[in-house]
Picture 1 (cartoon, rainbow, N blue to C red):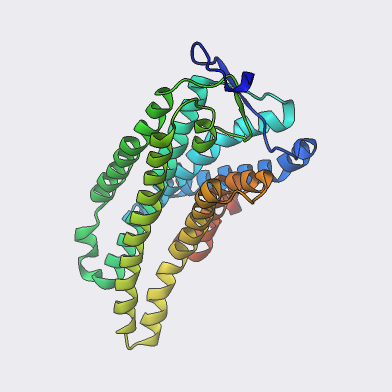
Picture 2: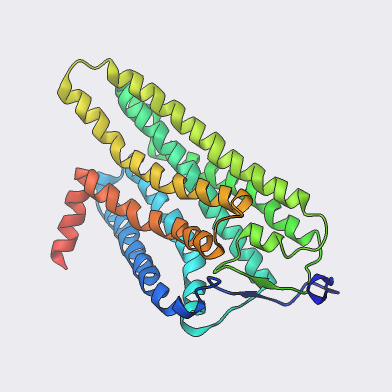
Length: 312
């Protein structure tokens, strides 16, 4: 019964248990996790460095790629340092304020990441369907403004998510079976009616995964319609190649996100350690693969990255 007593005040610390059921394998799990994180840091910093240094890359497409790299660095850095402290040293404690701060920044980066993918889909739509007006419609200044709008939207959506966690007292059970402060895991520590918290969390998921994916689908629907009208095979292939990298990034980003959201709410039959491993990979794999995909599929960027790596 002690676990269900209310705390007289907000508890000073939460305990992050890591991956329940796999505590003995934490050291082994940390090896691929740390490798993914290091590759993510190197890849995204390389993209930022090369685009900043090369004036020829100061274009809307590469500005969007830099924004994507920044959000990828943000999401992975929000969770990995603490997760590695749990795996390596057993430092499982995190303050309530630290936990809420982690939730805020993690989801702000994730929501901004989704907004950037929508903007990238719009960029590809203009490049293929209205190429003659591309330079006038999508200037660097306009792309920067769209990125700022995406960030403001993220803050406005995520801020109530964290504030609502202060609405109810926490129970004396302060153990979170996770490597980071996942929103729904923290909601389960609240004592009282958490309907508002759960509903708002679901609304954000629907807005991001539903609205943003709908906008991306509409963009690609119009792109496909325009591409099918192209009679020249060479132009047809070039148009498709410009979208390949973005489509790969969309699949890598949204597939684990949708799976994680649905399993956390409706997948009671899925083992906890499976869900938590997938939730971690959702914030690790896209930041690692995104710069690799764009470096491989974008010749201009690939050539510039090759120039700098050959000097090392």
